[in-house]
Image (tube, rainbow, N blue to C red):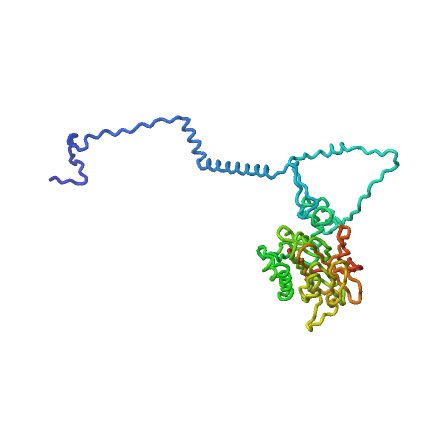
Length: 436
């Protein structure tokens, strides 16, 4: 055997295997396929898209689609919610619910103002030295304020639902929304006691559960006596209106009992019977001496002063049973046996004499309510010891609108000689936190 080294360049060569002896036959020579030449235009287009990027193109298309969808939505909303100037509605002047007047089946095209002026006929007075025109009624700026009931009544004329709230409760025509609200209280820019409305025919969830007249009276007695005027007692058991009102004086002439739920904006949920309105706050006394509350209601009014009941009046007497408040000894408190008769309403009752000091604040609560429904009225006055006059208990200096001009039967609700201006005494309510 020959020995071979790594640097041996003369390594033996093996002879090639004949093709006929190879199991695979003869291998053909390897020849590469020719690369076809591409169209120059195709090459240019592919280079352009490679530069632009497929991802960028997809993003651009997506943004374009979103833009088109948003534009179509805006156009659609504008088309749906834009009213034609020819479309108009009016409110019913009267009625209990202030519903809108039924519209004509065809549109009435408003006339041009100039054409209307030109079409007016000329008036010519022959043989007369002068022409007499009716007087224009004088309306003060105070009467036009939203807080003034008289101004609100003028809004109600022909206003009805078209004026905003409707209701048809105010005197004369229209709804008189602000008029009713001022009887039971106004917005929180109005100084006074803060009122909350409860319907004792519904539970706290709004389910109708009418207790009847007997059950209503029993619930009010329980609230005034056992529950000790706890609002949680009412809130946990009965429906409460979300709206709150601020009452500057209790001076509600004989009106529809539905006025209260209407003023608290729950007339669509509350029937005008077996409701309560509780007003709370603190007032600063404008005088020093002894006073007593005098009041009446159809059906009830109860006043609590400095955590003690100071008046129980009306047809219902939830505290005393007969309007005569008694002390711990069981004897009537001084002054509570006096009554004041007026019209055909129930006699006004008097509360006990209480001492007040000028500039001192006292907590005060007033509860009013309607039992069977129908009509409602309430008034709260006060009397100074040694003075025979009765004064309206007022918490504002704002002028009091003359209800007699609005068709309200005041003589049926106020004793003759009562001073409705409050005698110049203003019981200043304490400042309330915003939203309270």
